[in-house]
Structure formats: structure tokens, C-alpha cells
Length: 114
Length: 113
Image: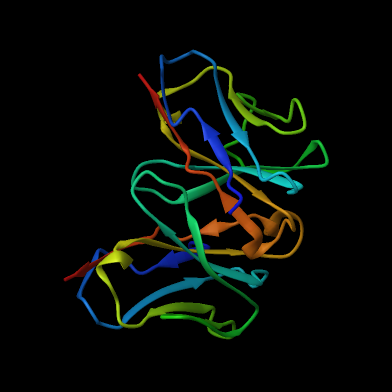
């Protein structure tokens, strides 16, 4: 069964450093997403991406965050200057329809900012 | 009022029990209703989804949506220890800002052998 692949599975970084989280979506999917889950809290929407541009972003997705699809297969989330409160699980998802039950999530990257 | 509220847990049941998991929501624009299962430090895995109101059955799992009450449920029949996980409800609308998934907080289910 097709999978969304995320790397690394765990990243530890110092506060103020830049991190790039990587995702390989399912190959025929057109819609791409990043969600995050702070320990013990809800899974929260960060950003959606379609047709090489951001289609929607949440209040969390401020100027410190950016997304890119650099080569037609990878989808990345960059955090420019990490803060302690950025520590969370970050999930990439892709969808063929952009709606409802069509999402497939990756296993996540656990980001720890120290 | 929070957009999606899920019954707090944790929930512990004996093997073979019928489990009922529930969520309420406030956004009338929601049209897709999903249940995900999540294991510790893993991504959400889609169990079932329903478009608009009604019931959907898949093996031991039944999802129900009552849009008039803004209430959704997941029933697990003949629960097994392998069903032990965190269950998340999620919802979305069709277009624009409502098309993103909005999740409940999740409930951790433990099925005792």
C-alpha cells in the first residue's frame, strides 16, 4: 500500500537553529499538508499546498515557517529559527482529492528543541 | 465552544465489549467525518470516513453521523486487545478554509484480555 514517508523520524536541535523536515508524499497525490501535535494535545493543521503554492495556512504558520516542493517528489517544512514551543510531532499528509477521507499521513518527525 | 470536542479518556474495557466513542462539533460547514487510530508516536491511520449524515459499517466498526445534533460516534463490536490505541475524530468541510482537517483531542482505549 502506498505510504507517505517522513525523514528524519527524530530530530534534536538547539533553539534558534533552522530545521528542515522532509516528506515524500504518495506519487499521484496533488494535495500536501503539514500538521503538528504537541505532546498531549490535538493534532493541529499548519498548512496545505496545491499546485505549487500554499492554499491555506493556520495562525501557527507564521513567518518562521515555510514549505517547498523542490523537485516534484519531496515536500519540505522549514522552521527558520526554532523555539522551545516548536517541539512537537510533525506529520506530513497527502491526498488525491483534497477532501475528507482521502488523506494519508506519514509516521511523523519528532522535533525536540533544546 | 471548541470546534470539535471528544469524550475524555482514558477508556478501559474487557475483551469482547462493545465500545462507543463520541465527538461533538460546532461548525455546520463540516461534511466529512473521519475516525483515525493512532499508536504512540505514530501518524494517524484512517479507520473510516463518512460523507454527510448516516451510518457506515466496516467489519467490527460502525461510524454514525447525526448532523442535526452535530454528533458523531464510532462503535467497535467484539473489541480485541489489538484495538488498544488512541482514537481521533476529525472533520472537514468541502472547500476553502473548511477543507482542512479539524481533530478532536483523542481518547485512549485499552482492551483488557
